[in-house]
Amino acid sequence: MPVELRDAGVEDLPAVRAINEESVPAMNSLPPERFAWFLEQASYFRVAAVDGEVAGFLICLHAQAEYDSPNFRWLKRRCGHIFYIDRIAIGRKFRRRGLGRALYRDAEASAVAAGYELIACEVNLRPRNRESLDFHIAYGFEAVGSQDNGYALVQFMVKWVR
Image (cartoon, rainbow, N blue to C red):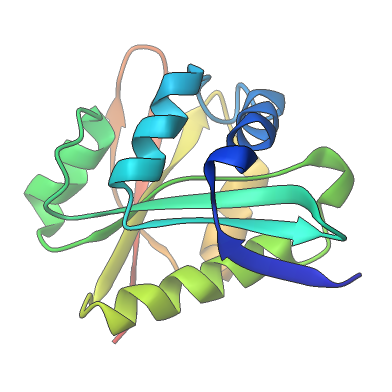
């Protein structure tokens, strides 16, 4: 299974959104224009392609991003200079093949190259995303707090990369 990690392009957005929507409620639904915004604003927006097919994606924002997410703002206030993982999703038929780990290794290398010491994310506790929680713990993330946004209870997690 040859895997290619590459920067996302406009042509990838329909597949990225389809994978995102397939992952609801583990992550929230987003309209197509939000993915176009990420393409312009994200410091890291890459896809994992298997035999040319988009199999998954990872989106990260730098600490100075103008982003309206309450989760991003919570982490930025408490943790400062973060490389923020907004979302990762792998298509159902491609799960359990190491694509998430490959994207995270690649994003971590990008964070280090950009001078970040801390990568941060959140994982849903309600609705519970046990798979993501287990993945982040195994990858070295630590819990640093939680927040109830009304629509979801999230666990904030960080990993030191230096």
